[in-house]
Length: 351
Image 1 (cartoon, rainbow, N blue to C red):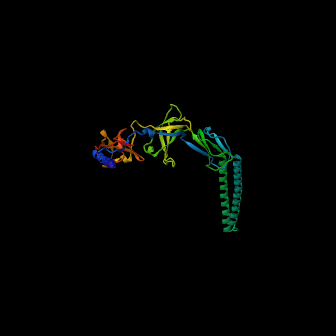
Image 2 (cartoon, rainbow, N blue to C red):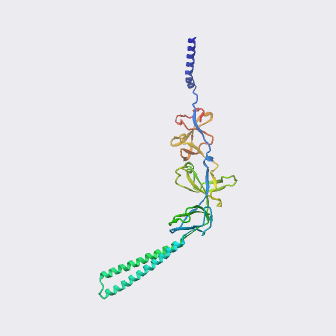
Image 3 (tube, rainbow, N blue to C red):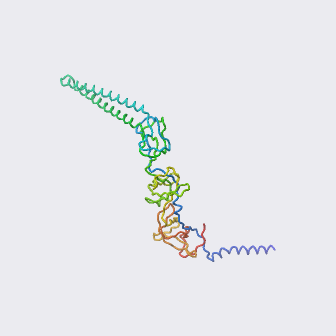
């Protein structure tokens, strides 16, 4: 009984050992790693963004002082020439008064120095004063004149500061940021508010590097609000910020809109207005270079390998845009391309 079981087990092992050899002899096609070429334009052209002003101006005083009053708040609409904020006028007037007193004192010193110079010059003509006295009084007169010039400059500066004590809006717009509150000490150039002017509206959004590579100057976009509505806007690319965001690695786009009445801060979705021609891409490893020309292995009828020449466009990171040679739905090998022959029967696709 035991011997019969052993002989049966040995027969099963022999049959199992022969299965790979039999499969190998039949020449069954090996499975392949491939990719179905698809139109990726839809995935490339939908980006979240926001409506912003084309021109945003940070307003600041041209002189130092303490902010006495600010007349606007965040979100207020202003018109050109409207007062935004004012500095402490008492302090500014005190500076003007002090500068005027400085000019008067310097002028008195200059008059005295000129009179002394005239007197010593007359004594020198009579042979009483020495050359050293002439040199000393001349230096004193010149120093007094220079002091008077400096005092006059201080007075002009103080008068200008008094005129610059009121900050006005340079154009119509909306206050989108407030930087200084009443009581704050500011210096020339210290931001007080940021004004989004009415000169234009634009859509602002970020796109990845692979999308930036296919954009041209003036690329067209379709802009839709995030809330449910049938309204759409059209715009053209105005600016691509050259430096990518360190976190998202995306580039910020500024798209000028044809409707300049849009509300600031509106959430939108931007779609690249591509032509009807599909945008097809392939991974870099699918490209086979033959005689310096790009080719790919396509799975043809009856799953036979076909070597197809393709025309490549822009590089999208690790992928290439295919401009000609393939159509959407083609199956292309992306692994083992160096060991395939023309007409070879290929196995089923492995995901």
